[in-house]
Image (cartoon, rainbow over the protein chains, first blue to last red):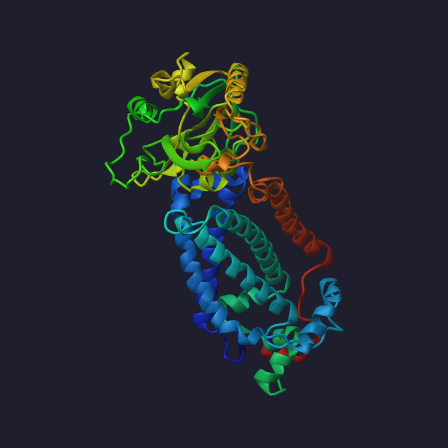
Amino acid sequence: MKNDPKKLLRYPPFERANHWLTAIIFTLLALSGLAFFYPAFYPLSQLFGGGVWTRVLHPFIGVVMVVSFGVMFFNYRLLNVMTPTDLEWLSHVREMVDGDDRNMPEAGKFNGGQKLLFWLMVACMALLIVSGVVIWRAYFSFLFPVAVIRFASVVHAVAATIMIALIIFHIYAAIWTKESIDAMLYGRVRRAWAKQHHPAWFRQMTGGGK
Amino acid sequence: MALQSLDITRRSATTTPSPGQRQTQEVAKLIDISKCIGCKACQAACMEWNDTRDAIGANHGVLDNPMDLTANSWTVMRYAEVESGRGLEWLIRKDGCMHCADPGCLKACPAPGAIVQYSNGIVDFQEENCIGCGYCITGCPFNIPRLSKKDSKVYKCTLCSDRVAVGLEPACVKTCPTGAIVFGTKDDMIHHAEGRVVDLKSRGFVNAGIYDPQGVGGTHVIYVLQHADNPDIYSGLPKEPSIGAMVGLWKGAAKPLASFGLAMVGLGAFFHYVTKGPNEVSEEIEKEFEDEK
């Protein structure tokens, strides 16, 4: 049973819904944004009804992202505070990538890698939002001198590239770590999974027992 | 204007060659500021030929009217009163697209074929391909393109590409009563301008010169300035215009490299999976929780 009550609740329904809303919005933003990023990707604008519609829609979809990502930031900000254990975890990341987690320090609800990813995404998103407002020609660009708009254009492109790379990484990490997609889809995880991947969180949730 | 042009040198957001079998002569419009009387006939002719009409505005107490370029006013006269060693000088500059050899607008444009450059040097907007993002405004070193509130397309001087294509001079040139605006091949115009500079120098304008800024590869609208050492006094004509470093970074090699980089991240992840395998719960721990299954 997907939601066996013996399993541990990792993501409550609202967090799951908001995560997937953010995922959908991100996909739309990435596809529409890439259309303007480089000519090879311009055909992606056809997915949105052509170049003009893509230009119109992209920033408004961005506004939805501000809300959904903002909620997610609020939900997870405290859970992602870096601790010395997380830094220790990150210093062993090479072993983790090699598929050997025996020497990894015990991760809490989120491990050091997830936390680092979280803060990098927060930083990119903040840059994307601010620079996105500046280059939103229809409503805001007239407020800024051209040098600022040029700078914002570069910032937007760079932050978007890093963001897409981080998301590819995020998706891959979820595929790589079996059952973690289930966790975000259905909310609950097996105790064995929790003990394997997030032992400190497992103890916190179960009081150390099974 | 014509979709069947065979003389396209460059096309925005296009990485393959454009139809360019026909090579035309490089043209230029020469604006001799020392001959301009500020009559605005060129402004009127521009609107006549292109059939655009600006709304009647307000009087700002100066001759500039309209005060700035608009989607309907593709050229405007800018009047500057400058005190110099010669006393008060009235420097009147016909502002509009400079038709750069290396156009920042075209470089910045993300819409394929929304901006083209003909082999004669004219940089032309193809509004049917324009998506209204305004990136050309961001890329332009001269602050020329204007986004229309009516249709969200950008407009600017076409150098009358439709007239030039059939052997006519631009409308502003045709109408100029003093010969301050002339049109011909770029070589001829430079030659003509050099003669004007010699004349101006002989009359005491020691810094007279040609404005054909090399930072944008030269332009296809060139000025004869009485004070070429200080173009800024002509209502802010930039001294050394160029496509900014930021635009270069934004639209240069970084984009294809970044695209390649993203593909590599995806591929790297895939090959990590097939070489290292998935990250699963160990059998040890599975055994511990056998009852859970």
